[in-house]
Image (cartoon, rainbow, N blue to C red; front, side, top):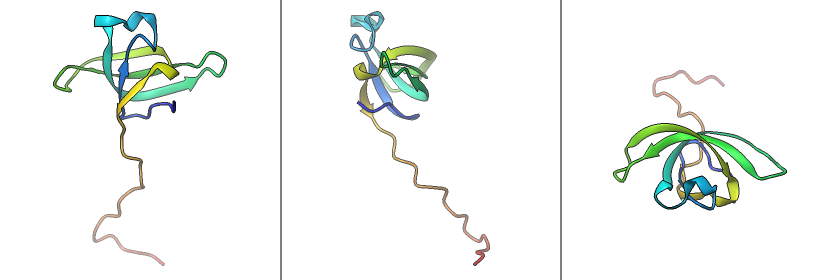
Length: 91
């Protein structure tokens, strides 16, 4: 599994850590992703817990197993900054 990117919406459940089993499962919009520990495959992610309507309810910082994260929605890859109209073009 690839690491989530800021803007992705992920499901954090029992496969990520035993603390997120059953009713404690979370849907999280990722804000930042820390380094993945190469020996244990655990990582820090920061994001906003989403309610059933997709609204942010609380900011959380979580230590989870990367392989257990389930990406629900990916952000579009960045393609660069759009050029402002009317800006002079230099050649």
